[in-house]
Image (cartoon, rainbow, N blue to C red):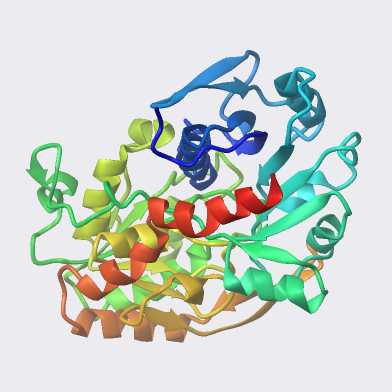
Length: 395
């Protein structure tokens, strides 16, 4: 018999598949296991990671139905059908939990008759109109990922509940080795090098890149001229396959030696590195460079700090909410996003360089202060403090 409090209801999670090596996929995997543990009947409605056939996702508490993506870009076309199929005529409390950009669901037919809980990222410094439009629908309950996001909804008198993203603290912790080797030997840099890391998806619209690769690589290039022991490890796909930038071309244009830049194994990157190996990679970094145009949450910043690594982050959107006192905040200026009719904020290169210099001079090694701060986002803490009260109040 379960020692965990049991609830009744069916929750369909519309997001990336839990096997997808993405931030959303990781959150789905952590959450669906705990929903199942609590006696609920969850299903996964994939918008990325599964297509052309029904599947199941295994958890320690039983299998969960895993429905494939639809034919529209974000699979909004198939949500009503799959949620109805999951309910199978049962008259029980139910909802569709979305974990994705909320604007993608605007103008999708058939969604007005469902109860939505939308776990909504706000990655601009002003609330995009389509995000507001979705949050104001009468059948939508908004869940904010960050205090910043919640404050943006409050400006328009939109009620929301704050529930942060979570990280598995049993895995993300200071880790010295990877595949039986010291991590720096594994990636091929000197033990006494100053290693700057980046963990960010190279996905964009081809012209604007929210992850600020250009600005951050320019800052590292200028910093490295006076710091010959500095290396940059970029955990991403370097090519343009997902609409991102050609990072090798960018590095060459900046005049940065490719000998100073490391990328992950391309095949392993495509399928995802195991969490234990990611913990080792974070742990060997001296600092994580994480200053984007805007973050809805920013899981890599929390993962890095759980491994004892400080972070250089943007002083706007959700990033200040997830950085401890011994990390570094950089300044920026507004940057208009015409597609979303809202402002991003672009990091200033001189501020990035100053933060790199400051982190270079500071003590290196595991930051226990960072570890302690990040523990608030440990998955069981988030489940008990935020998810259980929400579920009890809304089912």
